[in-house]
Image (tube, one colour):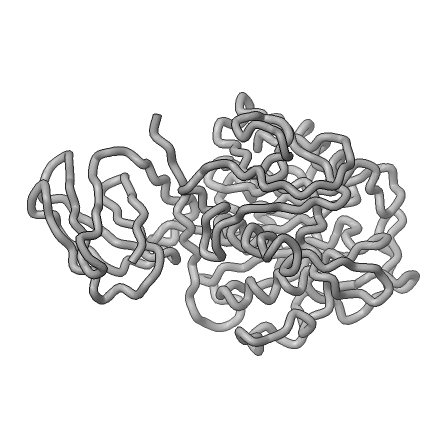
Length: 403
């Protein structure tokens, strides 16, 4: 059986803010993400929100994030500290900007829509939508909008927390809210993921052996561990979505099982979904001074959380080299093989026929080399390629190699 992986081809094009070619990521804050002892925002200049069960501005001390982080993300550099912005997701936000993405927040008063031209923050304007621990149920219209966003090529980051984590005391917590979403949209359970109603703490090294998985082996490095602090797990339903894949599991659980899943991903329509059943790995330990935050994003389990989260973000944002939302499917079949004869030369053995086009792409989806294969065995000079990960493609088949 052929295995397959997704090429992580993030579209990183320079340009002015809100350039149509640049990947834009939207972090949601319409679902009580700053209620109680939580601060799931990239940046907030004021803290005056009280959630019970909806946002009441001016009557509390919760973060009230503005749309654009300040100082401006155009001033962020590779040496910018995460405290440049005030939010427990600021480390993640700074990393996204340094990778070439634009980040925004859907504020307390924002609207979740898809295809609404009158809404400047309509989901159609973004490539990735982050929903970190929602504490207010989605309306029917919001469920439809999110589903359409994914189906039409968007990337959804679903983040849950443990059972009985109702921070705004409205009777709903994040696992139940996500399950309500899955159980009431059409088709039901479109992403093949349901959250279990439990609570536990565990550090797991039970990572699936998927060497070509872009979330486990992406640009930020290989993921080998995940730490949960007050979390639940997931149950997968391949019958509902045949693409759903568990990549990290509870200790002692088979990595071929559909239960005990800590991190999973799937595809729906032209889009993609990444799902994790704990919010604590995203916390960078700094943010609203009114809350008690815990450092985990970059400091816990030897930096594995940062690797996992950024690899997943890049995978969600990936487009193919033509800019078409949809992801290059890479089949690891035997139609051709590549071998490094030296550090500067590739040997290509093409089993199908000669005179085919060989294309070389970098991890950003840029075509960096190519040639017509003149015979069953041919060679390619890769002297001009810098060190890193590359993908050789003939037809619909792609192979990964290192320079």
